Amino acid sequence: MQHSSTATRPKINALQALRAYAALSVMLGHGILEFHATKGTAMPFNEFPLVAGVDIFFVLSGFVMFHTSTGLWGDKRAPLRFWRRRFIRLVPLYWLFTSLMVATLLLLSRHVRSTEFDLWNVLSSYLFIPSERPGGRIAPVLSLGWTLNYEIFFYCLFGLCLRFDRRRGLSLLIGGFCALLAFTAIFPPTFTPLRFWGNSIILEFVAGIGLGLAYEQGRLRQSLALSCGLFLLGGCLLVAAGDTDLPRVIKGGIPACLMLCAALALPARLDRAMPRPLILRGDSSYALYLSHRFVLRSVTLLFGAIAIPAGLEAYLYVATTLVGAILLSILIYTYVEAPMLRLLLRRPRDAQPAPASSIRPILQADSPPC
Image 1 (cartoon, helix red, strand yellow):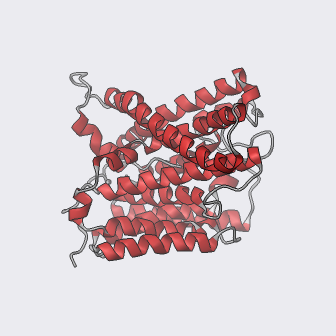
Image 2 (tube, rainbow, N blue to C red; image 1 turned 90 degrees about the horizontal axis):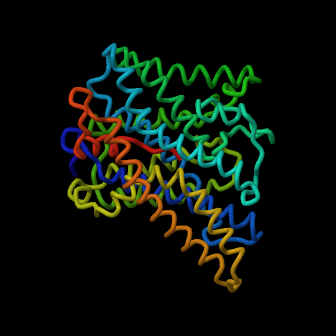
């Protein structure tokens, strides 16, 4: 077997496939919750913890940041360069959907299940500051944006650590995470952001960095059988953990690490042959994540207005939301996200939009949160 190598596989298409899987699993998980809350009945795959796709995104984010930061360590200008690219990649589209959510709550409140929000919650949502909703839940006005509050926190610290050489920078980052977890465990904070960030789920970013180091050193072998076995093992562990009281980093993080290893273990020839439609699903996964709640609610309202045989309703709901969310995300990616990235990443010298080839590495390198 050949070892993985960042020199031989600078672009890993399997990560796009994994990203697509994670986004779709989160969407289906939320669909199950939406259907159950509305109808009170079970759904297909109800026992599988689909929302654990979030853990895949966090581990993947740690891996990708490590994998793409070569050459940045020790550069005093690296933090600003890094933060600029993170901002362009994540923030504008998130602000767009946050604004859409605010408008929905103000203008179409009768069509949403929860209309509780206040001015600080809205403002903190745009600033990525964890805050409590009126009901006590720590979440932004666009509820699934809680993952971005972790992602932005990670990016802020990772960017700061780029000022140092890699060994010192990673030591500071990992040490800082461990110190934060120890402090919040010994002295439970009342300050909402500390309560939120002091969650062991942040160690999933560290796990991704660890896998990035192992991949760089060629410690991950390539084998189709190994790849399939690791992915199935990760899925089995997710089901086995179920609704246990284990920390999220254990019951979600370990399976996520195994699934990332499965993607990295895919032989290079198969990785290069990854179907373009599947790669497109990965490209549009961030748009899928941000938009799928709107699709779910729209389909729920539609199904409430028409007569559907009870035995078919759950399956039709899954099929309709799946197709609708995928198509909408592709449209958003093609006509909103990608053009916006080209505009924001254009070269200052000539003010010409960056070509598609310069955008592709960013889209490949980024891990949209979930």
